[in-house]
Length: 222
View 1 (cartoon, helix red, strand yellow):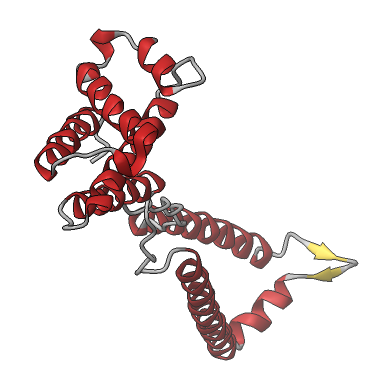
View 2 (cartoon, rainbow, N blue to C red):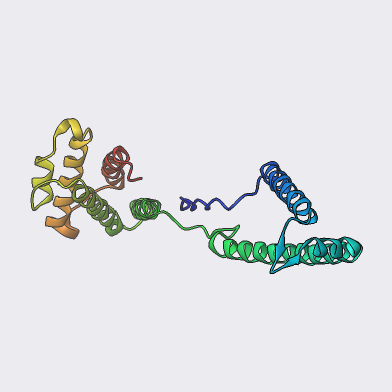
């Protein structure tokens, strides 16, 4: 199974309508404040160290086109600078996100899937041995299948030192193929005790392997 991808963090988003409303409110406030200040200064009622500030107002008024051009120029430079800065910032953010969350994440096998594949590969090897024309491979297939059964009992955390003790500790309602496990394990014990002197037909080997198969399928090993 593929590893679940990480959730990408939500980036800062800009709502155009909200921004426009805020800008409109600020413009209204600044416009009203500017109108008030201009009227107040031009009234001649304010002075600075004895200098009537209405003269300053008249100076700006007589050079209004110059200051308009200057204002547009400054505003244009500020707008271009802001645009360039935002583009560079966006580029940096996108590059960093691409490093953390590449569009094609490498697929990694899930640990449980690897274990399942390992069991399946081992079982296929056992089947191949049982279908061999060599009688020693038949006995080996039963021994290998019994090793898989022992691993299953270990996984179930059953008490006991030997497989026999573990099988005796099994609750039948929790192990529906317990009889098959016992019969297959007894055949393995006969092979272990008699070795090459133990005679068995391929048909019987296939039957015993089928008993192991029932057990392993119950616990989804294969």
